Image 1 (cartoon, rainbow, N blue to C red):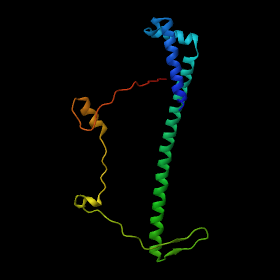
Image 2: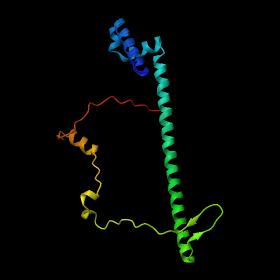
Image 3: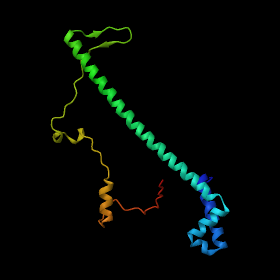
Image 4: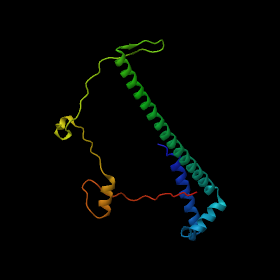
Length: 168
């Protein structure tokens, strides 16, 4: 099985660092010297800068799409509300006129008997066999308890992974 391209590049970067440290052990402990050497001798940092710019662009686009989706969902809800009000009006108007169908060239509209819907009068009185119960962990509560030293059966804190911070 062949490694993913990213894994292969990371391996090459690990080897590069090893080679640089073998040439000058001070590079292993002096980040400024390491950065200067890598920047002066390779295009690696330029590549990382390009990937960082791609990340910023992708995050910006994702944010724009998220806002657009929110706008479109609002528009969808307004259209649904308009349609519901229109249906209610047509239904009431046809009932008032005493007609069961509305003839038109481009659509068919008629009133038919509805289907009775269940109404819940006492939620607590419903038998368990008629209730859906969704069980999901409260991660905020569990995390807080674990960080405060409390034991929570079936849960533990993971090892924290480094987080990349990018500011513009």
